[in-house]
Amino acid sequence: KNWLSEFLCYVRLHCIEMICASHHDVSSRMGSKKLKLGQVGIRCRFCAHAPARRVRRSSTFPSSICRIYQSITMMLRDHFLECPFMPNEEKEMYTSLRRDTSQGTAGSKNYWITSAKTLGLKDTPDGIFMDDGRHANETP
Figure (tube, rainbow, N blue to C red):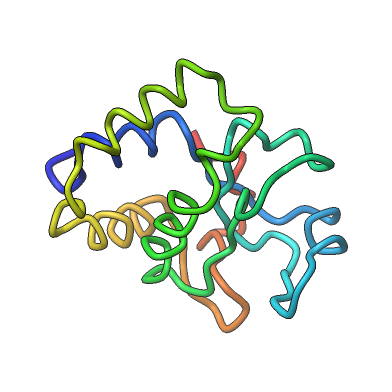
């Protein structure tokens, strides 16, 4: 919490969740960035179970741990205010906290890196994966 603004703490606790790429994710990924089964990513928890109507940047699979922060900032910019599944009260809180936040806390990039390593994530040539082979959704 000391590394993150109140806004980023809110996003971390209420708006995003860690996932591993499923067979569906791998087969349906559009664009040039291909996914590997089990690759770790981050998604919007509001529209996670509505694949047909998700808006831009509803999920991201950063290529390395040091790119998690950048991936989240792109989700913040492009996704949450457009997400039709984000409840109004959550959107109001999100907007209020975002408005009251400057560019973030200086150490926030380091927070995401340190937290990822603490959770047992590791960089590989194919992206981020769990260090011990567990599926990300199985973490306590």
